[in-house]
Image 1 (cartoon, rainbow, N blue to C red):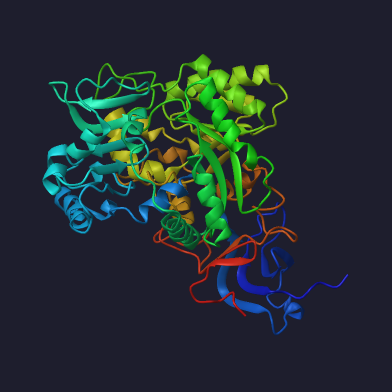
Image 2 (cartoon, rainbow, N blue to C red; image 1 turned 135 degrees about the vertical axis):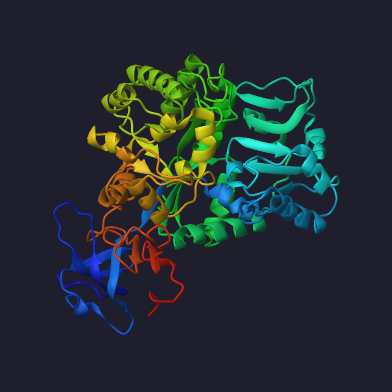
Length: 542
């Protein structure tokens, strides 16, 4: 049979197909949404070129599959496109001035919210702004300062609107931080965030779509073609559908619906009922993957077997009673959905493995990959062996460790932080692990993650060099392994003839480029399903 003409032909220095045993190719053709031909010769596919074919003739370039970010928060990134960009600040005065500038153009009484991708120990003062400092910036606006997904800081108007006082009880799995007199300081941790975040007005649909357009374009510009968003509010599924219909999604979306607010059987059932219309959705761009829960807290609240370094009697927060979580996950899997559970500390991971083992014992026919460990940050050898025996995949995120290393060392001490994300051991022992960013805790992007996993560099130096992996292994965690986790291997993750044309074109070969500058490298073109989602020079346009 004759091959169809190509819509796009790429001639490159190297096309790394990632198909086992296949040598490096030099030319690749795309027809429609799929890869239609490969050749080991640069001009081996020239017969497929017509006047309608776009040709990228880049003899120094390298082609790889588009990367998956298997644990990130595109929804947060979309919000951040309109929030106060405090991640740009390097000191408390700069931080406060950015909020002051927003207050000057915001009508009194309206909420002011900040971006979330910053860490206080990366500021000159190495602390969060205080409630008093936020009050000095504005007394006319409620201010919500977010840091990551587990911490909020409020000014006094925000505390008043939320009704948080000295008499407000601690919510299960959360903390209202108080001063020595028992008065709220303005800081909320864990499930306590819901006390205030439920009050924030939802932006209008046009604003939400604009945010998703900007955020997904930026993911694509870093080489990401698919995101697995691990905390999508159920009501945001309709926003995602509207954004997709408007052509505003520039990456494939695999959504884990947030189960953090569902604490009773009735609430879980209501969530599952609202997910039901998405069960048979087969759109390759937008799909609901499952439900996300959390067994413990984050940087300051992950559940440990031994006390924290900075608090002698503190061992973190458990967000669920194990038996209740078992029953909750059972309800989800009986409805045919998958489950990802956040586990950060070694105690949290041990208890989650207890939970997962009970679920598997009661449902022995579950499809592999139905239950996933999100993070598994401090995984002991015994826990790794147990997860592998149970066949439970793990998503890991070195960018999280990179940005959060300083506050995590303060909380846990240096040795435990060096042992976060033991990638070398997970791989050698036979686990299915995949890679992501956990934005907004860490930066998203293909090369920052690749650089981090191979160097173990963080904002405060190398942490656990013995856990580093090779570049080829790091690429696999974002491509072939990721597609396998998502049940899309054969369709994505490799550059095989017939596979979806999800690919990236790089100005240099990420496998051989000197390590200096690797983290900053960005692709010249990102294609998803044959569509150029990042192509600033118009190279993929005929």
